[in-house]
Length: 261
Image: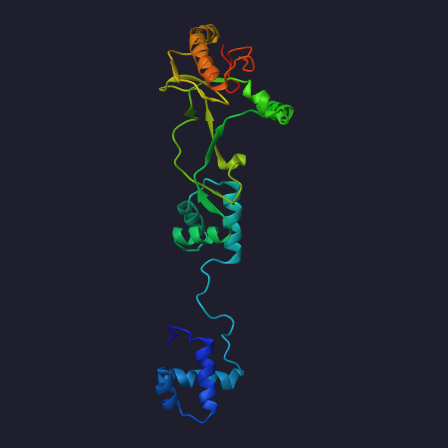
């Protein structure tokens, strides 16, 4: 019969100490409130092994082999959006039957956790290079420089394709690796275009842009929003007390917007 529990080392040592003092099994069982059969088992083990330590190999056996664990790690590293149920079916196909919960627990033990993917702009390699160069060229600019900048943007944020509710398997501090993110684009049907601005002093009023944006309409929108920018500058003037340090962008253009044809 399989043992339901393993007694503590301290208890086993007490059994051996009392036995060495000449106490019988029945008396030791009564003194420690332990079944007599357990007393006999502890003493027999001590006589056979010379120790009361728990022997290697005890406890619940692992349900997955090291080979299966390595497969799971490789699979989620390559395809972070794979689900635990899909992994369970993969293992079932090769004769390993475990639950999806066992797979989740195994991956967590390996440092891989299911997380909601971070949404990031869908950028081409050229875009990424350009942004990095821009960031490096401005990294040492003083605070006064940034106080003089008014940022503007028009945007229509939508997921690229249908909404994907899947999590991704990833390690800590790996949220922004490309395979662990959900790219977004600034176009698509069924949403509205919005325009806004902000500076170090605060944010401007959000404005809705009607229709599909092209180059001509884009210029018209910028002209039509000029009075909004002026009103915003007056607010900044009240906050800063001066406008001469606050410079408007030379063009009404968003660095993150798609090209307008």
